[in-house]
Length: 230
Image (cartoon, rainbow, N blue to C red; front, side, top):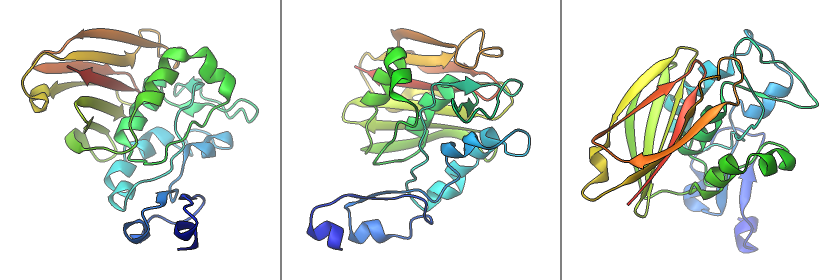
């Protein structure tokens, strides 16, 4: 209430999940209340399986409301080469998984968790993250299964974003693009690269005319992110 009085926005970090306070005080832009990405600085597989956790929380934690997960890692590790390196921490799973989180996870006040120099070196990914809206006009749950995978589409204005995450199983998804409506649409897609099993940072960016369906292959621990414009 005092924050609202002085026109301050609030991000409750290191706290419980939301309980509805933001409905009375819309200056509350985010809560943590989640096992966020910063935990990877001191955790190891298989005891802490962040990839499985990532495809579980959309169905449980996010039911309570938005979350400050702190995504956006530019250093990424596969199941076999992920390491706890505290001076240069990495994420479990692929680079495209990190991009997909900005669409799948609802977060009105989003974060960039990595060091600035990494974003300067990875301009394509940084530009995509910076363009993703933080509030949406429409959300469509495309497909998924608790603990296995999730695919979500969201619209802001006349631009659609689609994000997908999978567990440690490789997965191909076919997305019906009927929700786009009439007109000609262009898809900008970030998908897991051919060398992603050895280098989780590997990705492919492609641009093409939208068809009736969009087929995407997600590597183990992978994901994808797409922006679709008229």
